[in-house]
Image (tube, rainbow, N blue to C red; front, side):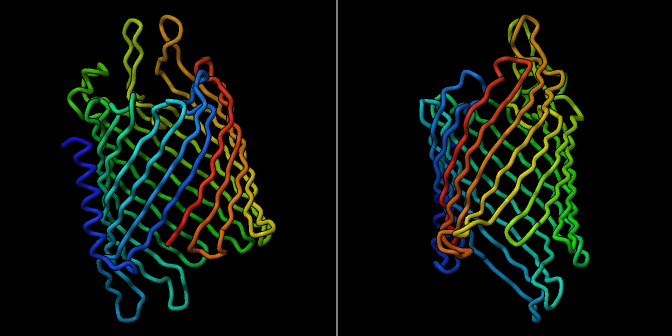
Length: 375
């Protein structure tokens, strides 16, 4: 089935299903935004581009079965996600995505007078994404399924986690198709001093499972890569209007990212976080100012090592190591003062990337503004 046919079928199915629900049974959000990037492709000879984004999320409860004392609730929910972006400067980066999912939630209140809930959920989603112009060859379809839980232990401890599988299929580039089992465990500790500590560990593996993959990437069997990651985060409330937060991320490559080298050809599957290991540090201060405007000022720095992968530079290629720094300021305000309703978000900053390969060394501005509605 082509991506276009799958997209049309998915959109039609979503409209038919949601048309059977009354307006009061549908919840969701809509986001409309614009932005600007000096380096949209992450290289030093980029053409700066502005962009528009739109996102629509809808969900409806198909059935709900609370028990007699209202302590436990089971519900099935159907959801739709639509995302679209349009880029200027003839960058051909615009794309549109449609997703349709079904989820089951089982929630239970921690105590009769406690608003917190423990939960267990399972679900799946099918989606399609299509690009414009030059990048149409990267159109894909995807299936995703997951199991997750959240469990409080007293008032100070929270455990959560998930296990998931993603299967992505590229129609015109089958060697990019993969299956990705991954999962995460997380622990949070809450202190009376307004301090929250969190620790999470994540493990994932990508296998390029089409028969074309070992031919293209020149491997004796299906090429694969795996990675483990850990995060330590901390948040400290200084008052009702002021807080600090920070985190440290580390990633360790367990098996190298596949790549191909022959004569003057240097190629690999689409690069993502599996392609490099290293660390990132982030810190921010958040303040609730006049007119109920949340202001956040943050900075981050990371070291990203691409291991043994070779990139096209001088004859023989070269390994790559990047240092990335971001500085940003964001403003957020509810336009109605209510949880539901429109919210304005403005953000801007500066990114510096220093690489041992000149192509990936650049610095430039990024900025965005969005208005979102929850209903």
